[in-house]
Image 1: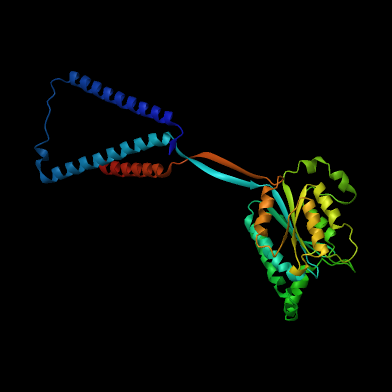
Image 2: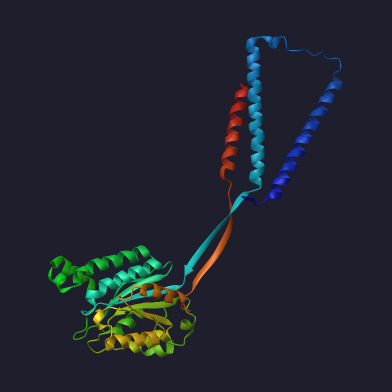
Length: 362
């Protein structure tokens, strides 16, 4: 508890004392003046008249009511002085604003689809560690589809990821696929709609990564990519940008961008790319997997696999520690008025005084 205007309370006390002293002095002066003007007036005592039981009871009642009313008024005046001083408290809070945009980029080709549910579970774990970041999600095969744009609505993010995990639950094994109902099959088809618009091509990973990067503000590709790489917009990017790419790096078809070319573009745009291997454990040592690991790490990203249980924590630490990622924690304090029970007590005292003053007048 602190007082914002203690000097105002002091002034009020001095003013109250001055008014009280002035009133007392005027009363005394008036009594002396009256006594001088009427020296021969006789005074009469009411003691004999008040000796009756009824009169005595009324007198004691009047005196009690007067004392209660006077006490209530005095307390109300004290509380008024306290409120004039503006009682307050310091409201200290920590505001955290994260300055990151993170895109979840998921390969949904036939070779990765059985493992995508595990990847989405990983995305859910990642999302649960974030606070204030904007998160978006895109899925790709030969073409891409945005599942949800960049948002800090974590209820939406969690809902969409859980829905995707539920839909993909039935495609983890061939037995699961064989047991799928028409309704479940249609749900999977609807969720993948828009990701297979090119014929004779699947899992175009470089193109998918570029499409995911296009969800981030300031990213440019095609003929404007080289010029945009050195623009002030990229150099002064206020929010750091990250992509979490999940794929097995098995390409089938002609790509517009290879994975290395896509990583070059994201690097020029100051977008970091981390990768999660989405495939069979037996293929971790394959050339396509090692090539992806080398390409991602050479561009400053982190490579992880589902087999490594500590990879989630490691990936989160990498995102947190990356120099481009900025977490701004500003401890702020504000002085807020805190009349609290003082106002209630003042209202009660005034009400008590009014009730008893009205009773005395009767």
